[in-house]
Image (cartoon, rainbow, N blue to C red; front, side, top):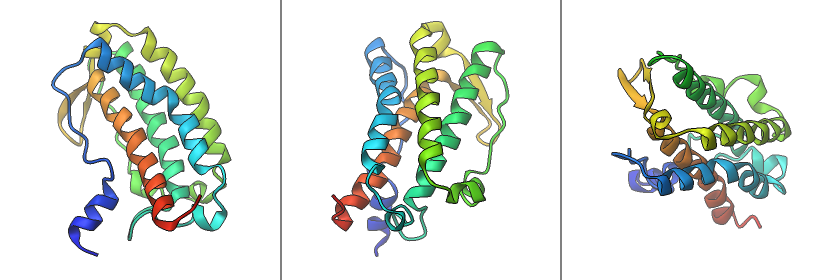
Length: 180
């Protein structure tokens, strides 16, 4: 497999592009992606067998099962970061080792618990996002790994992309494997 082919498997929708600003229309689209993700994820994973769930979406990549558990972990962290930024002045957030989390025993479990967690988490996240105003979306947190402030509108755009990015890992694998 060539480097370019591997890059396409790794980033099937392309890499995240940081927005320079936001509009009400963009915020609405990004919130829509957050809101619809649980149903889209359930739809794409509902009929997968254990063997399929244990298939890596790319060489040296996570399994579909790990991707789903990762989404629960990552989105939980993101919601907490939103709440910290909305209630504190430029908080320094705690990063986590997502690759190591994906190797913990709970990432080998059935996906039902993570699908339930994502469902409830996204319902709460959507309510919070819809309550925010322009000033709120300009609030920020500091990510110590990157050493810079991240505005909430950028984090929202990132997680809109993150939902679609990981969903594409599943849908593209299903296409390649001819899993209907």
